[in-house]
Image (cartoon, rainbow, N blue to C red):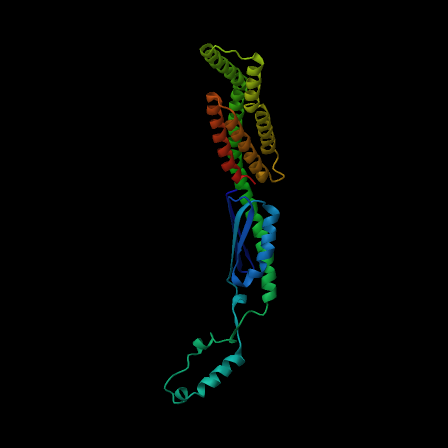
Length: 292
């Protein structure tokens, strides 16, 4: 979700500029920065951002430079004359000891008045900023799309690695109970020979069955494969709807199943394979933060 876009326009002697930047985030957060006189337009631009984007920290910065004569503030002649008249009445000015700096008087309250066409200036700015934001958003989305192609390839590769390791785990899983049966039988036989006792075969079978039940990971493997399949379908969609949060949720579910497999299986080969699986899922969890 990292991206950048900008756009500018010169309209009736006024230069408008919009810059849009986005950073990774689970949710959408829009930060709008406009000149003080146009801050009333921030809510409208925020709404436009939310129509185009659904995820990421998006910062919109706008500027406006008016080089026309319309930018000049008007001078309130009556207010200025009133200030001058009051100043002349002060003793120090009346004696001629200090002269009046008329330029300094312009900063007094009420002397300078904003342009009378303030409403039309705001309306022109609204139209310009909205159009420029749309153009800048197009550039940002195009940049995201280019990065998305590389991201898609990497996510697919990680899913393929998980599927490959799952195949190894599934192939190894049936031998876990068989190995346990062989070890258990050998230990019992050795103990019985020393103690000169006997054990019913049914008791051994029960113990092996209980162990097989505790270490059975077929259900977890099936669910994890289902998550990978759904994940693959989502990243192959045409991009008409946001899937980032769904992918994030699926990655969490994939990690949960992998952790269960790791905790249930004592087999060394399965443990090595599931470590690779968990590593790939962690990489996926990082990558999907960039997916809208």
